[in-house]
Image 1 (spheres, helix red, strand yellow):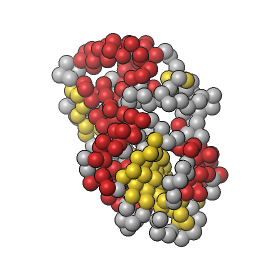
Image 2 (tube, rainbow, N blue to C red):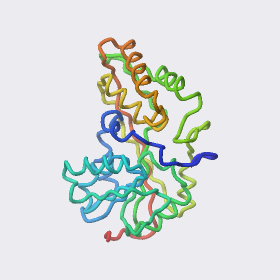
Image 3 (cartoon, helix red, strand yellow):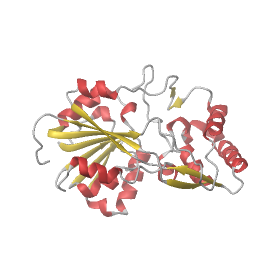
Amino acid sequence: MAEGWTWDETLFAGTAVHYGRGRPPYAPALVPRLAELLAPDGTGRLLDVGCGPGTLTLPLSHLFAEVVGVDPDPGMIAEAARRAACGEAAGRARWVRLRAEDLPAGLGTFGVAVFAQSFHWMDRDLVAATVHRMLEPGGALVHVSDLKGERRGVEGLPYPAVPHPAVVELVKEYLGPVRRAGRGVLPRGTPSGEAAVLARAGFLGPERHVVPGGQALERDVDDVVAWVLSMSSSAPGLFGEHLGAFEADLRELLRSRSPEGRFSARVPGNEVFVWRTPGPAAPSR
């Protein structure tokens, strides 16, 4: 958790419905690569901590007998349950509205725990130590993030790039120059240094794996608006009565950069760190 910042329940207020459309997908090879690294036999249990609307939980669900997603945002849990009910995970997925700091919450033990771009929002030392105790001998903690430093230019693609700098400036016009996060601000951004935290908790490793992205994406104005409104730093709840005006200005900005209303982008690559608990792997309960 960032120094000087306190989590509150408004952090992702109103973002859940925008995730599916707005957030770029994980690299297509991510789930097959995780299946290769974790070698699940279909009988274990997966814990997704900070699961959001089930973005990674659901694609991984076919590899486990049960998947449990925990998230403190009610909108995220509702959206995850809605998406699960429409697919093959309906009988295997369980969704719990819960802060990671309140684990283990009687959820039992797991063979795998996943943190997909969520760990930085938590009291990391507390959560890491708790999850270590929840994992079985030889279990795995998987930390997934976008690949840092990756260049994703759109040269050769048919449409202009999303004007990210201009979008950021528009958000600042409405919400101020310092990054918003719920009722607080993040002047220095979110923390890094996950490796030291997980080592302190007793995890072994890590094994680092890169899953390349780069596949071409086509995005329309609605996609980009959903992307902006899916971010904690520009969550709908932060704009209050000015949300409509912000969205109108955002659409005008996007149309000014692409009169066709189309943008080109590329799928981000992913960086995966796999940490293990001591001991041989055991069947999950």
